[in-house]
Image 1: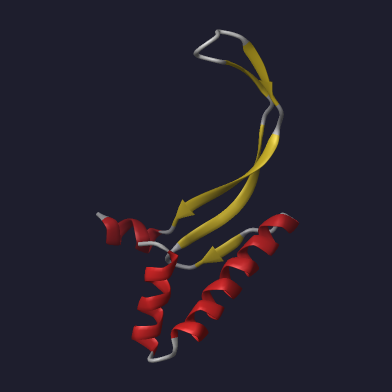
Image 2: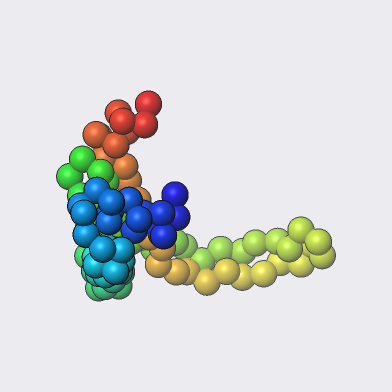
Length: 90
């Protein structure tokens, strides 16, 4: 499912227009992004948790040339599925 299919499903399930469903999805994504930028975690009970963590700097190797490259440390987003989601997917 992509973003447009999700918007269409929300509009159908709630009986609202696609424009208002699209605005709701955009607002949700914006809220999650803003919170993660601040370093906060987002928890949807039963669905899962989004949080950020630091990935260490490391040395990697270019497989074509064999040359080593340094990859700097960075902040990445992690998602942990909630208990209800895990059981629903089984």
